[in-house]
Image (cartoon, rainbow, N blue to C red; front, side):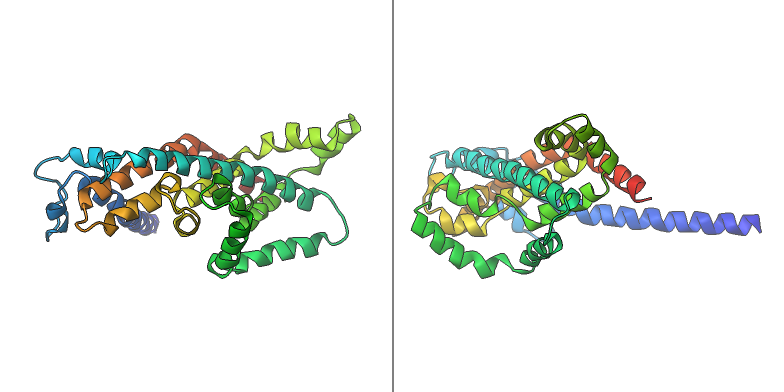
Length: 284
């Protein structure tokens, strides 16, 4: 009897390991393709069957990607633009979402539920539905080709408010009440107690907000008409607009654009694990 149970457990574990390995391969394969293709010529990339290991490594693709088709090194400026926009949006989203989420989670006032439901309702509206009105507003304000125009529509998100509220609902009220008894102001409570204990969800929201803007193509495509104000996704798509597309340089540009996201993720990855453990312990 024990032998049959042990056999079933071993078989179940083996199936789980196989499924996880398949999922890992399915997830990593596009990244491996992007990396290997960045070291090939365009002809080698398009040939079938695809060679996962190139015959020779063409490192000049990275030089071409940074230098650009016009040898103006505009890619460096586009990287700076993307970083400024993504970092600004991440910071403002974390700040405004944490303040709003804290207010909705820990303060009782008339209409609190209605306000929260109205904020959640905005998540049902696709960006494409409000894109043209936003562009008309940006035109009236004359903020095209500016960082303000790229940042302003995304300074706070309903999803961020939802994340912060749900996390702070589980935050013990006893800590807040004790701080009030000691004479701390609400601002001091927020900055010295709430924020330090929200590091996992803040890191998660910051990474998600940063990644969303780092990959954003649609809005910068509308608001940025000059090469100096374009972002990384626009620069990568510019390769396809050339008479002869340089696939190797395009892949090299994509690899360079992926490096900051990998660095940020692996630097803050410990907060994801810590955040899940804290949430589950409070939930239990």
